[in-house]
Image 1 (spheres, helix red, strand yellow):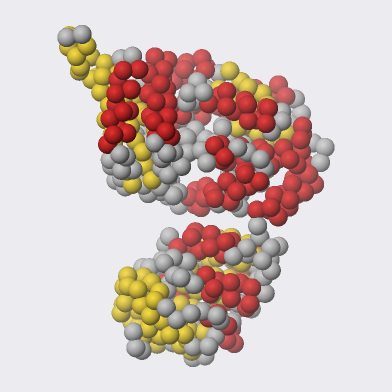
Image 2 (image 1 turned 30 degrees about the horizontal axis):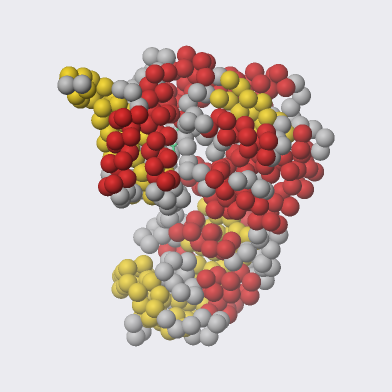
Length: 497
Ligand code: XMP
């Protein structure tokens, strides 16, 4: 399949840009800016996009990369680093965070673009290297775009993927016009291609996959099941740390609807025992991880001959994984380590979350499942502050079910990224039958977030909050106080542990 590679100089732009290129039905991948030229050639792209953040760094692509003879489109810091690389001079910032009208000179990248305001994050004065011509000008005479037709190198100091009415045209002009990519990328084609790749690779051998009930592992299992049928063996471990009714739903979707070969492992007692006496969140995660791994080992042994391990890794995991880790997340999505040194299959590696959801719908997974909110691998254990006990889990599970039900009844279920309850380790003082008593405190959290890196607290209607407080304090024995957390991320994380 024709593809572009995005060389990332740092900054947050590459991810969104890759999304937009795929939105134009052209496949692309993000690689670090210092990926060696031979590796780039091995990946076979028809063109490159160099992207930097608003703030420039010293990062630059090597001369070998510029010498590959591939068309190159550069944005923001990427355009400025290309100018510097070829001997141009960069001056001070002249425009920052402003919409501006841009006049374009004729150039293949700007074909069919209308004249309108576009958003400029940052534009510096530059004096262009020999062979480069200015092809975009703003605010009278400030150059914000260059072309070097000999090298098929183009650069602009504005980003076309956001706040821009027809900026995507620049991407498709480059990808399809200049690089000659066919518009071959779509999820249906992706599924077909993966199905035949998996069949070819696995053949008559067998694969095992741990599923969590999360979107990624569910879609991944459905895809591999389409390829292998009973050659895939799925494992669902009921840790006792799931939300209310979750285990039953998983049994129904996997076993009955998708016809996937599924073993349920009832391990509630094992996980409670493993968590006994542990209050520290990272120790809880580690204890849960260890228990998962032990069970996977036992199951792999029990199943006998297994050749492949399927994991539900998606593209954002890889990108986030390459950035600074925020905590040692236990994985919700069935990435289970090096069990028995099996060969690993990760068929969703190239997909963004929205692609995964689209694939899920095409594979016949019910909408409720496909649009499920994220749920952490360690489950309710990290929503139960302090030591985890069966009693605390029972309280939390009920309070969480009420909160989720009320948000859904209010029609906000799909509008809020993540909403859940926590049981916090603070005794609540209250009055019952005229007596002062102590009981439990529940905290509610609802946040909006696209990729969970940042989040804002959802402005839930006050009536809804009041209804939740009333129901939780009346229906869940022992709960005397309910709070709502309105802190964003940053500074707070989404989960409390
Ligand atoms: P934080 O709390 O770090 O969460 O803002 C970001 C996203 O990650 C989820 N999360 C986890 N997911 N294992 C997971 O699989 C974990 O240990 C874990 N901790 C947090 C959290 O629900 C949010 O979506």
